[in-house]
Length: 208
Image (cartoon, rainbow, N blue to C red; front, top):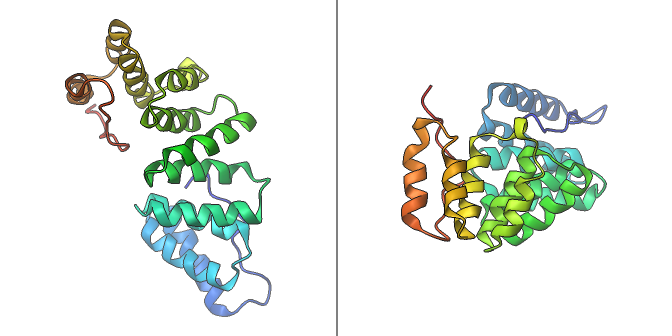
C-alpha cells in the first residue's frame, strides 16, 4: 500500500478496541493482507466517519482486496472530506476503472495528472479508461506523457492497443516487440481480438 495515508492512528483517549484495530491494520498492510486491512479499517471508519485519511485507506485496501465498487464509494467519501488531497483522485481513478466506470476514472485521472504530470501509474490507468471509451488518440497522448524509463510492460501493451485501434498496425507491432516472451500470449490475444478487443486489467507476471 505504497500510496496509503499514514495518518491512521485513533484520537487520543479512543476506546482500546480502536487502538487494536489500528494495530491490526498496520500489521495487515505490512503483510499485504488487504482483506484483513480493509476489515480493520471498517472498524476505524465506523468510529470516525469524518476522517478522510481513514476513508482513503479503506478505499485503497478495498480495491487491493478485489472490491472496487466499495472502494470507489469509500474514495468518493474521502474526496468529499478532503478535496485538496490529490492521492484521493488517484484512488477514485483506479477504483472506478476496476469498477467498470471508465468515464469517472478518466475524469479523476486527468485531474490527478494535472497535479502530478507524467505519473506512470496514473497515466496508464487514464489511458486504459480512454481505450474503454473508444478514445485511442487520447490514450496514446496520455501514454506519451510518461518518461521512457518509467514505462513498463503494461504501458507497451496499452500503447499497442491504442495504435491498433487507430489502424497503425506496424507501430503497434513495434510496441509489442519490446515485450518479454512471457507475454506473447497476450499479444496474440490482442491481435486476434481486432480493434476494440481489450485485455483484463490485471496482467500475469512474465517468466524470468
